[in-house]
Length: 147
Image 1 (cartoon, one colour):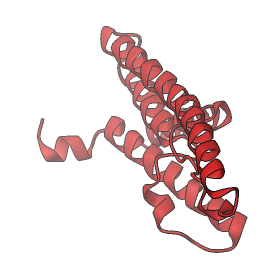
Image 2 (cartoon, helix red, strand yellow):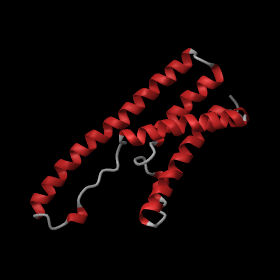
Image 3 (cartoon, helix red, strand yellow):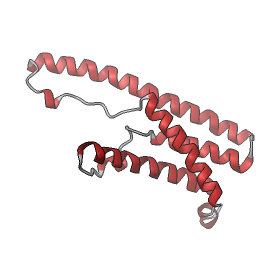
Image 4 (cartoon, helix red, strand yellow):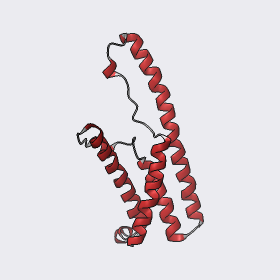
């Protein structure tokens, strides 16, 4: 496939816009929360909404809109479910580690350094995943209406 053909593909555009939109929403929510715009949220992989989920959902939705229920759509949908399950599982695992590390830290420092406690920015909550899922579908539908 040539570069002009890739640039004309609604599948490519929907996955790109899903990621871009999710990252922009994270930045705006951060700005609303603390009144400061932080560029790091443009690149942050955790937070609301899940950009991982938005991208894989946009990809699967785009493949369905483009080709229907083909084998390729089934493969993409299956891989999307694996990614979505992993981002939820990563959050649970990371939070368990965070709790253990913070307990050890508090014991060593006798609770004197509350601000230095570990704060996990890995994975996603179910709410963040649902938001990413809905965002991915919405972006794919919008891109396919434009093409």
